[in-house]
Length: 392
Image 1 (cartoon, rainbow, N blue to C red):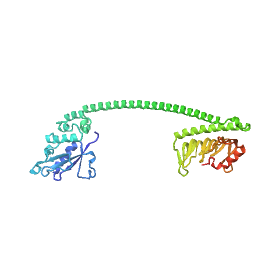
Image 2: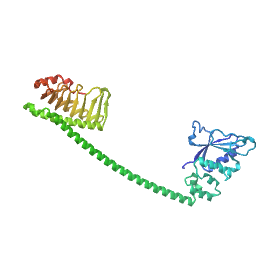
Image 3: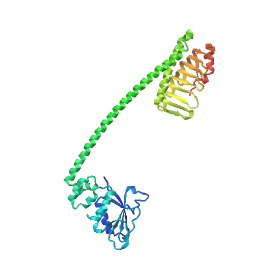
């Protein structure tokens, strides 16, 4: 207990002032903090008074009915008439000569306060006949505010007991601190191991995903044998496939980056959401852009907010370009897949309007369709460039 216990007292208006003063002095001597429940509005609007104990001190000459809400009721002073007859047995009686003395009536009141204020031994202190008895009491009740009173703490026995207690607490605190330190070091060690295991598992997973992407790309390309490509374009188509494969690997890395940084950026006006690596709230590195109102999007590499490097883009109408990108436009070598099954492998370049157009490459017709000449393929794609991976 580090502070005085608080007691709220409702005083009878007719109680003699000298008797009230004597009771207040006696409570002060026991370090019981008290306040007038009827002054200052201390309990106004506070039904439980902050957990404080409520006591009523009635005038034995006039009062017979305890006020409502009082947990301890005291009938103070001599009974001069029949006003106090019929008072419940739970109401305590004290007279002026009892207050502050080891008298039976006063000790009975202190015993009630002891229990209600959680001050073990308070009645024993009030009943102690001399200072030596109180010093002995302090040895057994070191936690009570009275045990730390200046007049009592000068006792060598009390000081030695306090010193031993402080040493015990200090040693216990030191042991607790060492235990917590060891637990903290172990937790850090476990965290590092868990992170290492997580990193190793992520690296293994990414390696498997990369191998799987390569196998899928190889299997896909096997359906379009290079032997069918004209000799003059075979090298170009082979390079285009290499760049398309890199684009698909970049898209796979972008998907992993999007998982690590979900919903990093959003543009409500364009209904676009970007997830992945960013710098200064701008896509930069590996990431994925999706458009809420369409099936379009892009997964791959960004440089300062623009699609640059390798990536896979999907237009609103389903055209897919896997290959190189420069300044937000498909440009360079790669693979174009059309919704109707047609497939182009070669080089594209932005036209005067900044849209990609076919420069040179090989056109694969849709499965089951008759083949087209290279010139026809170029002309068809240029007509559709407005649908091919529009810039965002």
